[in-house]
Amino acid sequence: MEKYKFGPLVYVTGAMDESEGNYFWAGLPPVGYDESGVPIDKNGLQCLDISCPLHPSWEPTETVFSEVLQFNIPSIEYFKSWFEDNFLIISDDQVKRYIIRWWRTKAFRDNFRSYNQVLQNYSSVEEIQEAAWPDEPQS
Image (cartoon, rainbow, N blue to C red; front, top):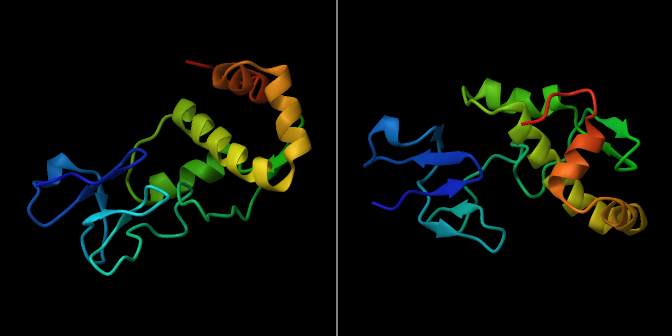
């Protein structure tokens, strides 16, 4: 049976042993992926709650302003809370990368000028991460 994944989520489906996955979806099981890469069920509906910070349409309700990114981003703790609420383990380093990915999508659409400025100032995700969270340990 095919395993369906989205970011660090590995969907547990009926025919799987629980140890093979980490994300229990209460709806119909995934059978494929949509154009955003989100698993979908047989009716074409996404198998990912919009409250998940990895969802392409997710909007945080708590943000902090990042001087480096010139954008309001979710805090590490706020982003991580969804994973903790769903009994999933995610490192701070992974969270930072997912926040940068979220920022990249939103800033490209909403504030292209600041997005472009960041890309001119930093040559890698690692450099952006180190600059955006200078007081946090990096891996």
